[in-house]
Length: 169
Image (tube, rainbow, N blue to C red; front, side):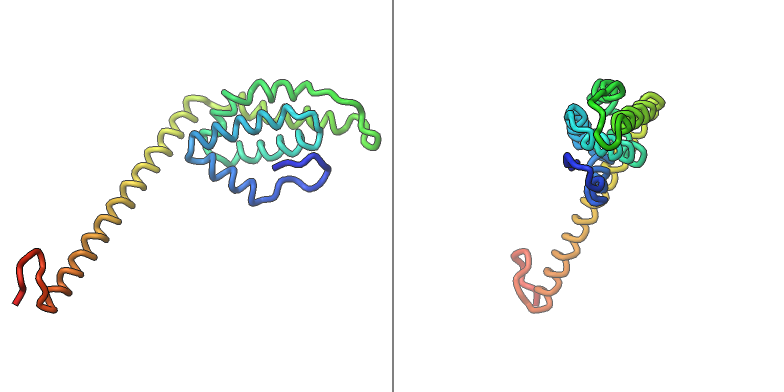
C-alpha cells in the first residue's frame, strides 16, 4: 500500500477499497486497523507519512467501525508515532520527522474527539440497514423465482404438458 519511497501517495483505488471494506464490515475495519498499526511500526519516514495520510482520509470519510477499531488496535501505535524520532534527512533536515509527528497528532486528535457511544450506535444502525437490504434482496430473489416457476408452469400448461402430475387438456 505505501512503499518505502518518496513517490506519490497510495493510489485512489486503494483508498476507495479500504474505505469500502471498513464502511460496513466490522471485521474488515479490524483487519485494516491492525494493518495500519503494523505499518506505523516501520522505521521508514515515507511509509509513516503515507500511512498517516491515508489513515486520516479513511477515518474522516469511512464508517464508524474503522474509528472504533483504530481506538482499540491502533491507538498505541499512533501515540508512539507522535514522539517518533529519526536522523535528520540530508536534504530536508528534521522536517520529515516533524511531518510524521504532526500527522500522527492529527490522527490522534480525530480518535480522541470521536464519541465512542455515537460511533457504536452508528455502527449498529449501519449493520441493521445492511441486514434489511440483505432481507429485501432475498425476498426479491424469492419472488423472482416464484414468477419464473409460474411462467414455466403456464407455458407447460399451454403446450398440454403434464404439470404437477395433472395433464392439462
